[in-house]
Image (cartoon, rainbow, N blue to C red; front, side, top):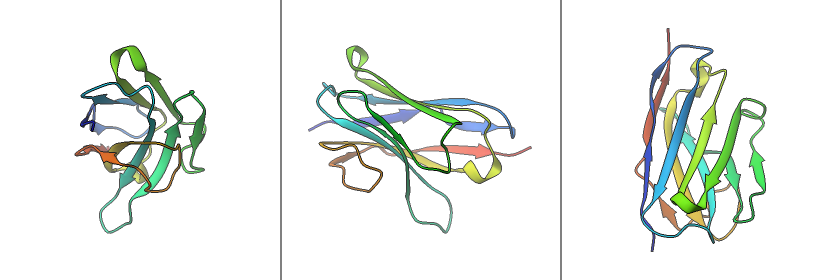
Length: 119
């Protein structure tokens, strides 16, 4: 069992950047990590994931703007978000599981962190 805590969300202007962190309560090196987001009135969307070996995947909506990474020594994963747009406004969640996928097939989920992109 692992507990996940997201941090780093907040209010940012369009075109700005944020870095989200996902801290695990225990070892996370054997888990794939996914980042998801859910905007008001919309379904939760998988936006990026990274396998235990470091292979990364991105949804088209964030490709070229977001970068996922992990630091297994710190039991932490990151989502660097650049060139943010108002459409990126959502609650962002990280998740841990056996396979890197943009679908909701993860065993453990964080509580989410709000990202608001607005001028």
